[in-house]
Image (spheres, rainbow, N blue to C red):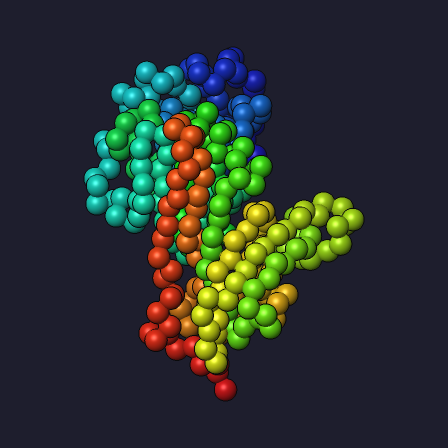
Length: 316
């Protein structure tokens, strides 16, 4: 589906402009045509700020379907405030578990099964979108910036930045491996040793499938995972994990390689899924606070630590 129209009179993001749709298309790709030099993050922000009108009505969904003859209008910030919907009630933020908040960062607990941020499929409900809704309830001009990600099936601690500079400072720490990241995984069986380091190289294809490769493989990235057995019984082990790198499926690949896949991780060899989720949780996140420069650490309890309430016996 494509949207076609003549070149808009004004290509500036901050100014009023109009765009006539000629063919059926979703709204976000249409905005990308209007602003080819803008990132999807900036385009989504325009939607969230209420600056995008379709046929004169504010629209906030990236997946809004447009048809030929629709008119998309971009308005400036001042006009957007007047047209924005009323603040959402606090009850709508009940799904957001806040661990810490100040003027610079928002630390929350991500539930399993929820995306950290939208993909090209334009999902409306993500942890990022929930955080944006939350801060905009406090101030219409507020925003939350994504700093890092957790896999959809992983739960645990995540930090969001409240402005661009804070985001950059935090991401620099992640890039330099200065952030302390601790996870806990419940795995089937257990590794042969009580602790160790899995150092490997991973690559993902265009379908986001991950595999272990040699370091010389084109596009491969280093993956370093420290692990220690914290508790175990005849069926499963609780593993404490610290990562130096943050690769997609890094921990899940490491546990599979050790012969003890994460409980619930059917993709990587698990045979049981008693909680209908992958038992991997980000329990601690430590970093230098981007404003005070003091080291801070935020934690979250392991949701699957009480194994007495979980049927972990393998199926016969």
